Amino acid sequence: MLKLTAALINKQVLSLRTGARIAVVTRPLINPDILKIEGLYCIDRFNGQTMILLYQDIRELSPSGYIVDDNDALSVPSDLVRLKDIIAIDYELIGKQVVTTSKEKVGKITDYAVEIETMYIQKLYVEQSLLKSFTGGSLSIDRSQIQEVTNSKVVIHDLIKYKPVTLPLATV
Image (cartoon, rainbow, N blue to C red; front, side, top):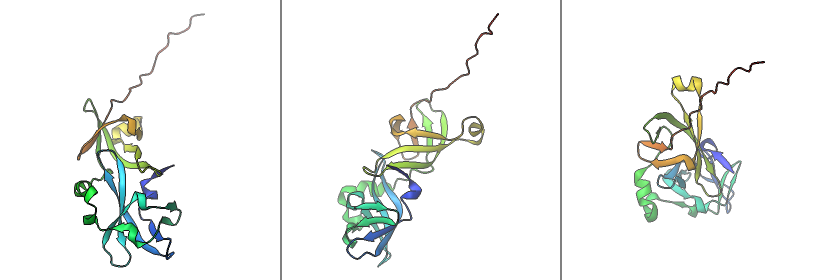
């Protein structure tokens, strides 16, 4: 099932053991190499420290929040050696410029959809410039259209341009 970023952030992290809220999710931890959410940054309820909830530690995503076993599911960022490089990048997808392989500017990313089971980012939602939005509106870009992800932009395959076809007038 696909979920937008608004459904992922500002949610509570709930403990199965105590049944209480243990943290609040603030933003995702994105791996830009494979466009996957590796974890979620959280603010610990007990000490106010920034922690990371790894996606594999989430038991369930319910309407009330993320359900985990207990407070041990939250990790201090410095303890996650495998994710050290990704944490250092601190990649944010929203606001990135989207361009085609032929260097045509498409717009900026305003949102994205995540497959909840795998946490892979499946779709990017791009707001076009004011002039282009009159003719084309916003775009939905599938992950298969993405060619490259850099720190400043996302490069996609060239868009197909449709031109109106004029048919010859029928003579009777």
